[in-house]
Length: 305
Image 1 (cartoon, rainbow, N blue to C red):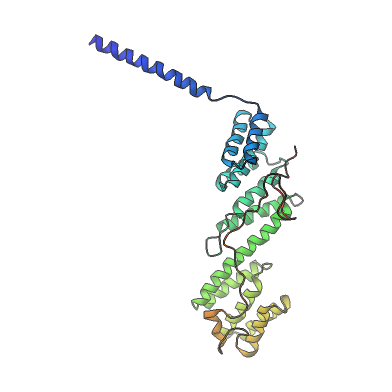
Image 2: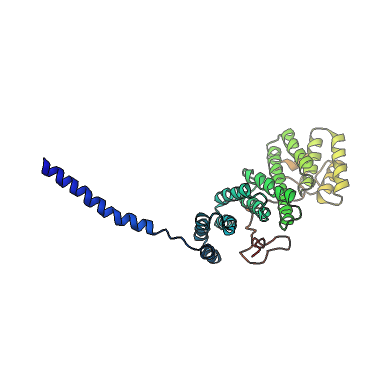
């Protein structure tokens, strides 16, 4: 019995002794390095489009030198690396943390702008849920409202308009669906939303024309005349106005084949409706590169070295 205990004790001592080198080796893997070296390594990875490595390197800057000025920059650059890798959720988490910790930082406009891009580039076609469009609109509008004179406000404003146009396109898609299924009142409500809520979008002329069609279908001639007058006053000479004018004058479509006023229901007579893109293209310039348009800033132009 004593001999068995002795051998058991000896075995445990030997096992513990074997684990010590392994633990020491693991601990030795962490080596504190100068902040400049870590940051430059992260930027080199970024230049090579190795975004996963770059993000980890920027995290290491924060971990080893949390109170340096480079740690603050590393937060943004790490978020950008995740954005380029299409890790939008991770990028947004980092950006929200930066905004919360450094609301008055000179690079705060960039953080808000990049957050808006993360949502904007997840916008789906109008046949799908538009939650990302709404979040993009809200985030980009914050850039315009909070930093109207910043380098990013102009591009954010352009993307706000595009996002609003996309939401209007969603309403038009639903309205057309109701028309195809012979539910004119439900369709009318959707087209009214476009006219009243998205007045500056490209879908308003068609929405007004569809309202004229529905009013005529329901026998509401006065409402049809008033809506057509609004269409003619704001969009004179457009194909949609000509189509409405023909309907009011003859009861027939100006372009659709057939003889009945309701020929538009199955085939949607009149000008071709605006089409919605299925995806939003990547809008950011590469690090240090030129912007893709005069209104679109380069993502690294905020850096003041």
